[in-house]
Structures are given as structure tokens and as C-alpha cells.
Amino acid sequence: MSGRITVAGLGPGAEGLITPEAQAALQQATDIIGYGPYVARIAARPGLNLHGSDNRVELDRARHALELAATGARVVIVSSGDPGVFAMASALFEELEGWTGPVPDIRILPGITAMLAAAARAGAPLGHDFCAINLSDNLKPFSLIEKRLRHAARGDFAMAFYNPRSASRPHQFARVLEILREECEPNRLIIFARAISTPDESLRSVTLDQATPEMADMRTVVLVGNSATRRIGPWIYTPRHAEVE
Amino acid sequence: MSGRITVAGLGPGAEGLITPEAQAALQQATDIIGYGPYVARIAARPGLNLHGSDNRVELDRARHALELAATGARVVIVSSGDPGVFAMASALFEELEGWTGPVPDIRILPGITAMLAAAARAGAPLGHDFCAINLSDNLKPFSLIEKRLRHAARGDFAMAFYNPRSASRPHQFARVLEILREECEPNRLIIFARAISTPDESLRSVTLDQATPEMADMRTVVLVGNSATRRIGPWIYTPRHAEVE
Image 1 (tube, rainbow over the protein chains, first blue to last red):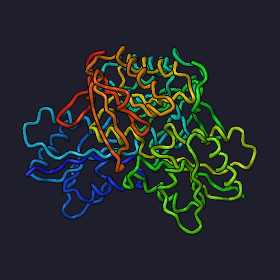
Image 2 (tube, helix red, strand yellow):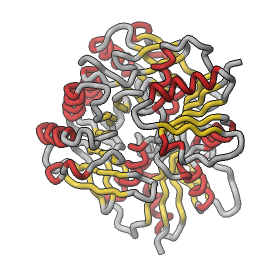
Image 3 (cartoon, one colour):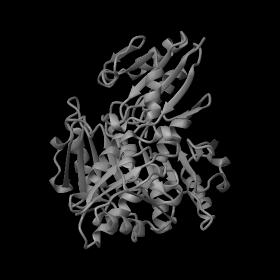
Image 4 (tube, one colour):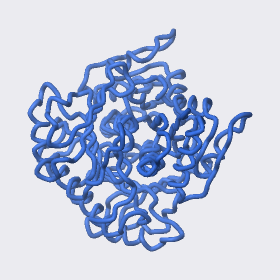
């Protein structure tokens, strides 16, 4: 018999941001698969097998889930945030393309993605049309990232950047800031939201001319306002209306 | 004394997609404010005042919340989905700009936004860089919508459209499809996701050349894949990698 694979989003970190639907899937699982720190968020219990793995082995993880499901297991692949936003859902379907074993029942359960948790903490910077861009060039050329940044800026979209900076590519986010400075005015608002809803949470907002690459790391989501994004008191928000182009 | 305003996202419809954080805020509220059908989702209890209002009166609603909070009330403004995505959070800050009374404690609580619930049901169509665009021209000129559509298409972003079509502007989505046909190949995948996670849920996917305006209404979120978005079995997903521009 073939089992089931559920890909569940655990949200940005806080227990209060995990949906009841995802919690129920975790309760019914026989096996949990995911990046080690995410699997570590799941409480151990008898009959539950926890399979933490390293970063950047998404396709191995997906294959492992397919193999376990083929033996009848109820597998939950955990992602932080939402599994469909730069996370495990696409990786599972990529691996499924070459899979010749039994095809399991698959369910994708949405979660609170990092940009929306960050935006809520800051106010409402994504309150108008916006783009989400993964700045990692592990799986795409940087030229495509640059092209998308320029289109997003010229369309006056607000922007959310995932994976802005890592130890293995420290200079790239500096280049991203340069591109934004070519396209946007110096007082454009930028929010650096790190580890929102966890004990390590920090939130910092600056204007584009003040932004430096060191303000971001791999636990940071960067939000860039559109040309109308404003401060009011401690809050940053983007008005719903736009009068001009 | 000044009270508190919490703007909480109720998710797309199902109880299982409301976060525990939002549920806790609802439990502690003295007053719930929002669009009538959203307020109708809240169970009545002694000591809780429910204030449902009509559509398109977001600033009136925000002012009402500020007035109640000024008397010490613990107000929750409810939005469907996420309150920061084309919903009440920005409207509250807009109203706060002209507010001369006491400024309450304000918290924004994220929710599962419609595009992510829809994407999860379909597979992972937003698994790569994507844009979210509100197609209503109530608060912005259609020329700006057109400009953003063209930048999104030329940047090869996947797209999510909120408010694609209403009785008061039935022809506009037809024009959106025309613009997409000018910018994208005929076999680009489009998903019409209606009322996801509610009893009225429906999900339909077609290619761009097959799409018609009648496939969308105000309860529909429309997802458009990027040039690499594919079908596998009943699923639609966008690969994480991009080799070419």
C-alpha cells in the first residue's frame, strides 16, 4: 500500500503561528522529514520517527519521503514559513517527476510565510502590489535576479527578499543594494526583519541610502517599500491607493 | 485610558487555517469590527460586541476602531486572509494619519493569505519568484495595473491576482487576459481558485489561450505560472531553478 505525504508550513517560528491544520498533520504522522532545525521544533513521541537533514539537500529529502510513503508511512515534510514559497513543495514535485515507484497521496498545507510575519510586525509595508524574490543564486543566475529587481522597481512594486545573504555569497546583497540605488530614490524605506516571532527577533528600518549589506543575514527577510511607503509613528505602511504612475 | 486595536487575519475560510494567535486575540476582544461576512464567522458570546459593516467602507471601520479603543475597548478588526495583503492593516494606518485622539496600542497579526491557500491546493505554482497584484481599479488607475502586469510578465515572475473581477467592472479582467496574451506564450498555465477552504471551493486550471473572463469572480484568486511552470499529474508547480533568462 502507498502512504501519504503532507508538506506542512510551520510558520516563522512561534507556536501561535502554526495552523491547527498543520498541527493535526503532525499529530497523525509516522515520519517527519525536514531541515534539522525545523524537525527539532517537533516534540518527540512514541511511534514518530524524526528525520532531520542538512541544508541544501531538498531533493534527497523529497526522495526519502517518497520511499517512506511507498512502504505505507504517513510522512510530513516540514518547512518553515509556507512550503510553497521558496521551500519544500516545489522540491517534492521536482523529485516526483523522476520517481517510478507508487505515487502517494500528496497534500500541501499553507503556512505563515516569513514576509507576511515581518510585514505584520512592521505595520503594513506590503499593503499594495508587491513581489517576492529569492536572492540566492544557488538555483538561478544572478543576471536573472538583477533583471527581476529592475522590473520590480520600475513597476513600483513593494518587494520582499528571501535569503538575502549567506556566508558563501557575502558580496551579492551589496550588489542588490547598488541596483536598488540605481532604480529607486535615496529615501525609499527598507525593513530588515530577522527571525520574527522567535526569541532572536529583531526589526530595523532605514532609508535606502543608509542600508548596508551587514544589516542582512540568512535569517533576515528584507522588505522594500514602494515609492509611497510611509512612516507613521513606529509603523511603516504602504497606502492602498496610487494616484500617479 | 486608551485601549488596543488588533488587526487579525482569519485566513481564507476554514477554521483549521486560523492561527492560535488570532484565536487568542478574538477571545480577549470586547469589540469585533469588519466586513459583515467576516464578522459573521465569529461566535457570539456575552460581553462581545460584533460590528459588521458593508464592503468598501474600510476607513469608516478604522475610525470606528480608533473611537472604540479611545474608550478603553479591546478591538479586533478582522480581515480574511492576511490583514496586510490588500486588506484592513493599511486602511487603519491611513486613518490614523488624520486621527487626533489617543493613539492605541496596535498589533497586526498575520494570516494565511488567499494566494498561498490557493497555491497549496494547486501544488506549488508560486515556488519561484512571484508578484501579487490587486486588479481592482477602485484605488489606482488601470494604466498602473497594466504597467505592473507587463513588468511582471517581462521579469518572468509567477503572478497572483486578487479581486480579479466584480459586477461593477466586468470588462477589466478581459483586458488583463489580453495583456497577458501579448506578453506570454499561449500555453502559460493559469489557475482559477475560488473560495479555497470553504464549502464553495473550486479549483480549475487552463492554459492562457483557453482562459475566459467568466472563469473569475470576486471570490476567485487567479494564479499565473512563470514560463517554466509545469503540470505533473493533478498538480501544477514552478521549479525552483531557472537556467535561462
